[in-house]
Amino acid sequence: MSSSYEAVGRIHEIFDEQQVSEKFRKREFVLEVVDGQYPEHIKFQLSQDKTSLVDTFKIGDEAKVSFNLRGRGFNKNGQMLYFTNLEAWRIEKTAAGAQQPAARAGGQAQASTATQRASAVPVGSNDDNDLPF
Image 1 (cartoon, rainbow, N blue to C red):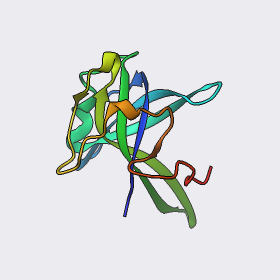
Image 2: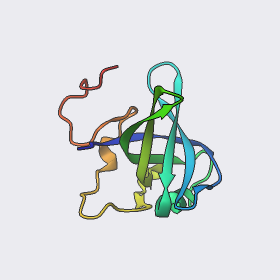
Image 3: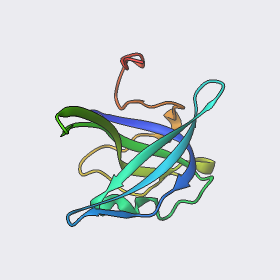
Image 4: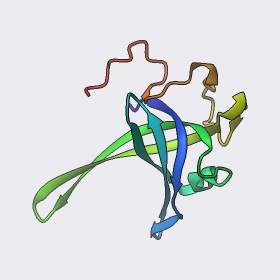
């Protein structure tokens, strides 16, 4: 079972949509998140019908991104390789207190922007220290 996470920051870069295969398309964007002294640049992926969620955003917009953590392995020439992906499923504008959801997950409650966090944490988690790093 995957957990949902949130990250709040500023849109740093938006990439064009890519048709990866006949049945799969994706679009990536980068969120600049201030966590401590230096900003982090975190790349998220939107896939399939969600690729248009970032259309209403521009570089510099403040946003809250809801996402799932995904990991996969594949065998390349007999060696197992692994990758991790941050699969975004909702993006909300947060500037000036305006909350404008770009998409809603079916049946999930919308989180309040009043509890914005500068780093990614599990939604509904009572312990902010449950990440291994």
